[in-house]
Length: 328
Image (cartoon, rainbow, N blue to C red; front, top):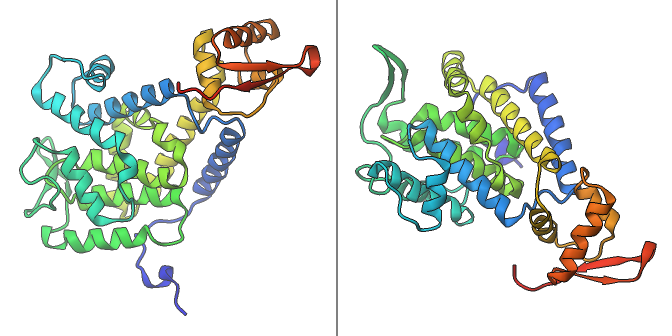
């Protein structure tokens, strides 16, 4: 019996030693993050990362709003700025806050996401283009997309590829590059490529919903576009896979260095509460926040007791704590 992998034509790419090494390193870091319960960040950290993701992805497309202005829009506050930029952010907030409503391997879901992401920003959002397009830099055509008649078939093949047994880390990179190459929409292709890569990764590794790797792309946009261009010339996505895996690796480094950041007592307690540990000791608390002293940990837990966030039983080396279950 033929497997789905033997029937579907995979997009062209090679698995290089560098890709194998990066996947191994990323897998180890994902394991370390799970072991430290960092795959379930606190509500404040989730909000902060969502703001960074939206800001960085739209900044790549020329949006001028700051993280502070995006925060205000999330909190339903009035913001002064270009109407187009505000609309882009409002749309992105809606999409990223409902990420679990989309299915990464479903073409109709993909079109619905584009419709919501580009609502009131272009004509007929959520529909594949009906005209030829190219990317022009200066006076030179940098990339000529496939004819519009082929777009539905190319995208169907790409979604079929997502159903193969290739690992998600690679599939997400390949989809991102191939979608950019096909350029299925008149506008919004870049933000859709980054959004859908996040969604593909999130299906397998939920923490990627809160990992703003877009900010690393935004910090060096020239390298992002250069890599896309190099892959166009080579006719495969190998270099883009290597590039995006490096971006993911660096993003995971940021999450793993969480304990080295300076947080106040309230922030530490809030984060630890989000881990939902059934029972723990002061040592368990210090294992999460490795940069604090035993006396600081003791004061933290004492405040937690006073605030009703934790309960205590036993004394001295037999002391155990449990988290209370009231709403945050």
